[in-house]
Amino acid sequence: MSFVIALPEVMGTAATDLAGIGSALESAGAAAAAHTTGLLAAAQDEVSVAIAELFGAHGQAYQSASAQAAAFHQQFVQALTGSAGSYATAESAAAQPLQSLLDVINAQLVAQTGRPLIGNGANGAAGTGQNGGAGGWLIGNGGAGGSGTSTAGADGGKGGTGGAAGLFGSGGAGGAGGTATTAGKAG
Image (cartoon, rainbow, N blue to C red; front, side):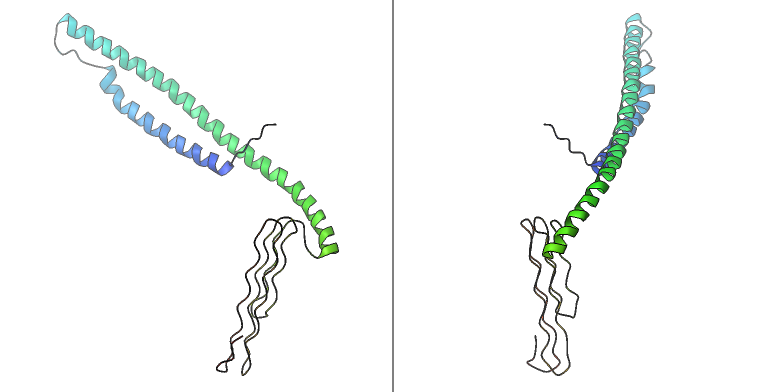
């Protein structure tokens, strides 16, 4: 089975870069055209005239080949730009049904176990000491624990624990302890 991996953003950037290269080559060819196609003979003898005509013919042949290459280059840039747009459209069209299916699967697992199959856990609210939410069973990072409460004249509140990770993911960071206003009473 074959797989194709295409990154529309990279393809778009490549098309822009290629268009810039094409413009530079066309400018260089146009600047060289007058100096390579209309050569004057170095002297009035037959050999000088024949050599000037030969070099002029080579210059004209180059300009003709350069024009064909520029046309091909322009078609290639247009094809690359169009392909990038097509891939982006296809990706966005394919993502929606998959997301809907994942939402249905996750809803059932959350109802049964409290955790989704795939997804990151929510972060705990700041200043509450709330624990971070667990990540998905299969793929997902745990949410960060919320920072502890700050109370006047008492110990600072405990920071929340970081949420558990899934099979593939990282556990959430624990929350910082709250700030106490009495000396020696940090959480």
